[in-house]
Amino acid sequence: MKRIDRAIAFGLAVSAWAGIVLVLVPGRASVVGHVWLVLVLAIGLAAAVGALLRALPMRPSAFDAAFAPRRRTRARPASLERVEREVALASGTAFDVHYRLRPPVRTVASALLVRRGVDLERAPERAQTMVGTELWDLIRPERAAPDDRTAPGLSLEAIERVVEELERL
Image (tube, rainbow, N blue to C red; front, side, top):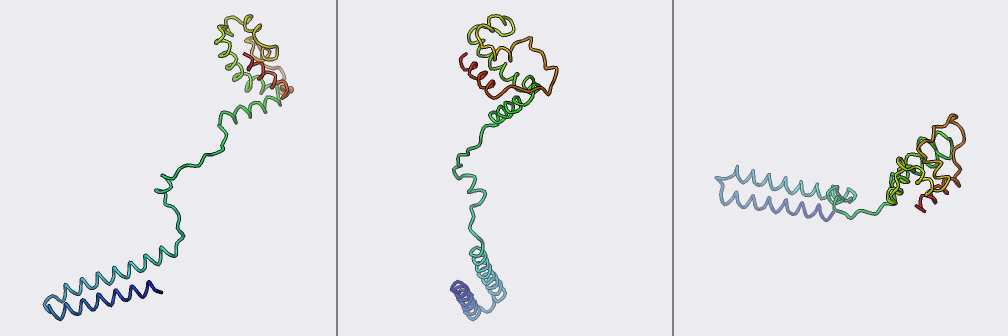
């Protein structure tokens, strides 16, 4: 109520000013009337906006939010989630081992072998001597697609051994 009382007081003060000016300068009644109207409407608008601002909850604007420091997210990288999905699928069927797990494992193994001066495609014999048997069975160039696509895939223990063999490279 205090703010409304203040707005009414300002309105009365403007009205008193307009009355005094009309008495002193009667020839300018239309100008004084327009100025009075603009001032009274401005006071009313200010009171309405103030009441509206008090009634609305204060939330940061989109502009302020754009400059706020960002919180660190604990989101996992998409590539990690993709590899986890491929490993999970590869533990299911032989199809997934050959077409989902084999390509990324082969890419990593090939890159690691190249660092040691061995090309998997050009010198498969040398590559076979450098990698373990389970890893070799998965990355060998002549590995054929499975005849039975629904055959069991690799166990998680076997996939773990393949990863360990990759780490040894």
